[in-house]
Length: 338
Ligand code: ADP
Ligand code: CO
Image (cartoon, rainbow, N blue to C red; front, side, top):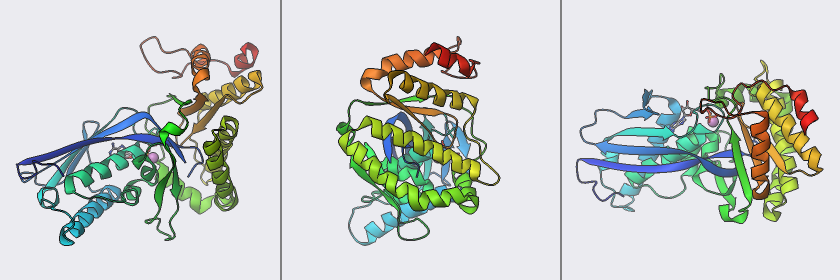
């Protein structure tokens, strides 16, 4: 609890990393992050939120769920006499200011980092401790994984509403120090279909998704945890790629279909396979979430070379832009050159 809570303004700032699902529905945290400041003051008339400098609608149900739940936990702690909770964060309105240092809503898990950070920061302001991944999960399913570092497993709850699902660390970030993550920004645009609404349509319409959830994901989770424990890059990489591909197959199996990958994404997929085939070894893996941006896994010793290969086929824009953005390189040249 901040010590100056008796004064006019209480303010807390925290940050949280994004996380990328390697089995789509386990994780590695990376340098993309959200920084959130929560201030509360008697003089605030209402709760408000600014995202990347622009005011957003505070009445969104997910945001409201998180706010309500943290306040409920704070009240409970106070009534249980567990904390000398100052009223500052509880009886006052909050102003939330959050900045993502990466594109929002472009398939790079801003919702995960955003809600993890929001819930954690609110909890500091309101003097709440304990299991917060259940709360953050109400903002965004994947947020529960950003509450921890390293490799994290998201465990489904028993209740159908998912409100009791939580995250557990499988291994800390120190476990596999040679593992590297590269993010290739294909497009920083907001995706047309939000992950949550897309997922709902998939659940309603895709038979493949049902098959995946029943028989594929549980087995793959086991294999993935084993691969991570053993630091078996080949197994980790192949599982990651296959699972990304199957996830996007369920998107196509959704009716109407959802397209997250674009031509550049598919060229990245081809490039990775050609690179691995060239070495007759799985040295690099890709995964894509609900967007066209590629997340690449490789071991430290391969980073420099692979980055050179990417720069060769997708030269950076001369105006200082990002890799990959809209540069036409025919896929056939990839095979010729590699
Ligand atoms: P992404 O692939 O980036 O997770 P989603 O569509 O799943 O895209 O989620 C994007 C939404 O998550 C945003 O429109 C916003 O409502 C919420 N969000 C993103 N970043 C933050 C943040 N820093 N703080 C609060 N909410 C955020
Ligand atoms: Co999301």
